[in-house]
Amino acid sequence: MTGLPQDVTDQVNSALAQVQAALNTLHGTLGVHLNYVPGHVYKVDSAGRYAAATGPEYDIVVDSPVPGDGALAEIGLGHGTTASVSAQQAPKHIELRNPQQGALPHTGANLPLIGGIAMALLAGAAVLRRRIA
Image (cartoon, rainbow, N blue to C red; front, side):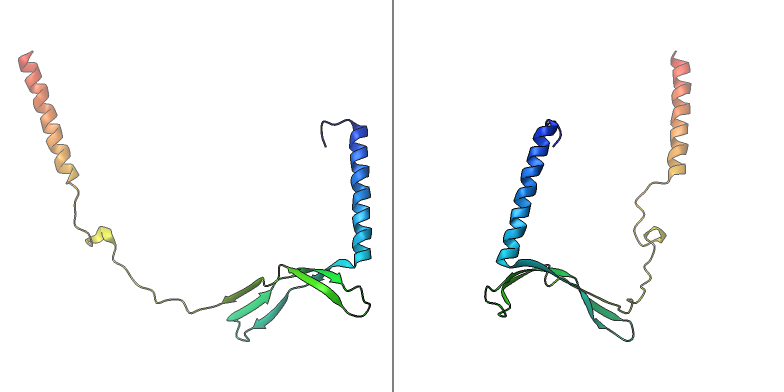
């Protein structure tokens, strides 16, 4: 909380700490807690061509008020996060023709020819200008 006086910041932080402590006490009384369920690898091919795994999750558990009845409700967060990979044979290599080696029609101009014509026209223009001037 930047910009607030230190005593106001201390009072707000103290109030938030009291609310957090009350919620933790209430959760403990109500029997609400988090369970961490680690992920696991559940299939690996012996040839190393396939593998699959499930990621970890957190379960929010609400215990039954009757002792010994287990969980009243359980909500999984991150459940079903599964990944798998498989190695496949590479596709056949196909050699394609280079388009610059005759696969496409030649649509450009002959640049040395165009350059020569341009030089001749410039020389002709220079000669005409001297004769007219």
